[in-house]
Length: 253
Ligand code: 13P
Image (cartoon, rainbow, N blue to C red; front, side, top):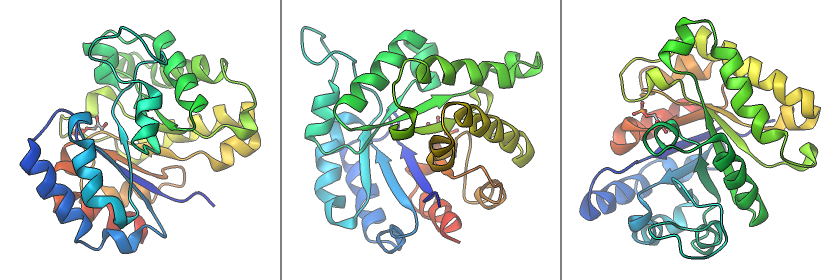
């Protein structure tokens, strides 16, 4: 019932010519034929989004930005608004990525406001949650993830009609080559599904819960075999066309 989703977070990597090359390789691959069974979403650097979209526009992929400000408009030098993302036909936007939280001091309150602002312009937030290694070692994984999700969901009305994606990204697995085991990931995904059920059965049934953290074409299949893993948010692997295509092919099967 949930359509799988594979997203590539390019972060602040590459240059204009590598972005064009990557987008062209994805468009000219098997991926456009997969979109009927798997949503494919690209998050390039915002400055390259228009160029990337001009290439992938008729490939039926979706796209988004990696961050927005929560205000509608104003003197916020360096920021982009949710309405600007909507202008560029972004279907999704990342919110609360651990790099935003740890490197740029983004708070839970910022995350709440960004999710609200995106929903108000009908852009689907991809809410990123996950524990640090210290939290995992202290046995706090499920509590930490629950807190990050509840603080946002408690601020939103009408869970039945909420259109959101959740990405579980253990901080210790991001960019480290260390992936959560299928059991570790599934334990957290099941817990997230249970938390969602507390708000609404429909929300729990329909919400895609992605795994992110050193996903590649080798480990994607075993992770995707878990019942509550609905797809992936890939970082490093999304910068290599063959890897990203390999992940998407896995999810289709
Ligand atoms: P890696 O796939 O490079 O570990 O990054 C994951 C991530 O942060 C995606 O948002």
